[in-house]
Image (cartoon, rainbow, N blue to C red; front, side, top):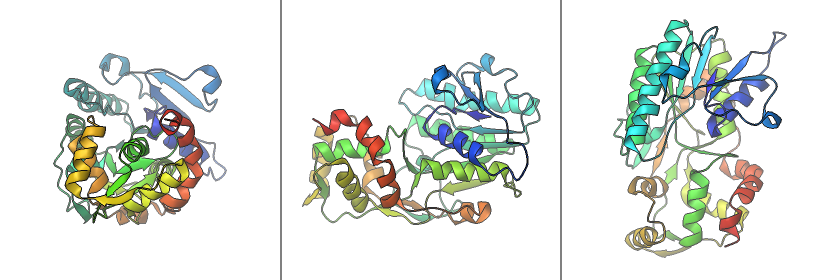
Length: 317
């Protein structure tokens, strides 16, 4: 069962599970736990949709019956602390309780490298990186991680994820570049990024592979080659038809303009775009033996049409 299987990350996981090799064995039965199933015309006939809400544990009773594996890909990333706790922390506890009752063998939780807080972070391994969450969302997801690991589950910490369905990473960068078409002079940060489909393939390998990960382990998940954020911004501008950013402002001037143009952008979000945030991801690729795929430049070209359609109001402004 994929919890949050109708969301951005969850859909990619479901597709990877359904597309995986079966080696002559019947394909797995995949359930999706969601608050609102998609309209009938948009449903996959190989998926069973189960209604449940992490913020209401009563709706989770019995949902894990008969399952071997739970992939938890649901989260609330808004700024309301109470809802963060209800969904991310307490909802995960309720889901783990149901999984325990059903004797689920594998539990994989997709968290976030945002639990590390402000950068710079350069090549940190899972053992070296120390969580220091800067938001209620990240803090509650870290609490969920602790619970999953205590229960013997596995935690994945991706960083910046892009692809069809992305509503934060590339849209935020595009809005910033549209309103402030400049890049801070002298800043050349690098970040760990990954296409959602590649994350889905990693998850599928973890749950279907012959080498299950050790209980309680944490893995960074991103393309092994960090991406230059300046080069990434240039690629986004080229494919979305935005002017290439000028290199004419100091870091302080750029931050001031950004604050004026995008007042809702938090200090942590700005830090993610303008400071090093790249991590050692060698353990996950070595364990799963999944091919990491092409880098951002090639993969963004494949999904740029989706972004143009979904950012049409911005791009035509």
